[in-house]
Image 1 (cartoon, rainbow, N blue to C red):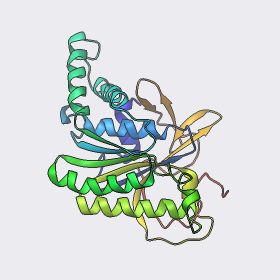
Image 2: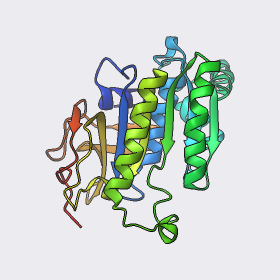
Image 3: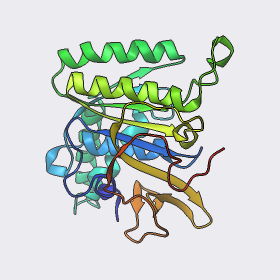
Image 4: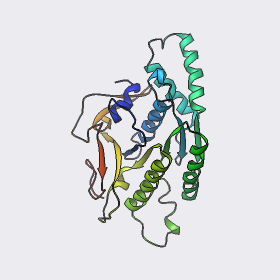
Length: 258
């Protein structure tokens, strides 16, 4: 399966839903940011190339995604949807389209939790001034947990830290009528202390690293010239198109409590 169908592996044939939440979780270095970047590229690409032609706000905590890397991901999307990819004139056209697509991305660089909070507040005004913004992307949600640790006066579990930000994103998505995608270390999804929070409906994308390589929702995945996802599962997992409401009291499938 070519990179252009990554979104189908995640969302099914209907693609990204309006005002949806997408959670991309997994261990460090499992490809979470690459998957987020490729899904963003799909959302940027024009309709005639199978995309959604959105404008996007990226709240960049880990600084792994740049306009240069996103431009390459957009090119992969364009090539995967065109039979004329070998044509030099088509390549020049794709390069120009990719530039226009990336120009519709606003990147808010964050270096602290305060930066993230301020950026999320800015999103409301940015969406109000630009009706083409339909997606907010955030990479990596758990980035500043340990940075803030010395200044905390009370214990804060990874799970509670994550849930509070998840609730903030969900509220922002509903308020601004936009979709949200984010990456997070899977360890922040484990509820060790039985804490309870309001349920949030999310699309789940679970990245794992096994002896056979990387998997996305149990499907083998290859990061080369885009993202290629096999249609044959290597083990049981959450089905790739499944949307689930988590109350977050159980250990996520495939993970063990720390």
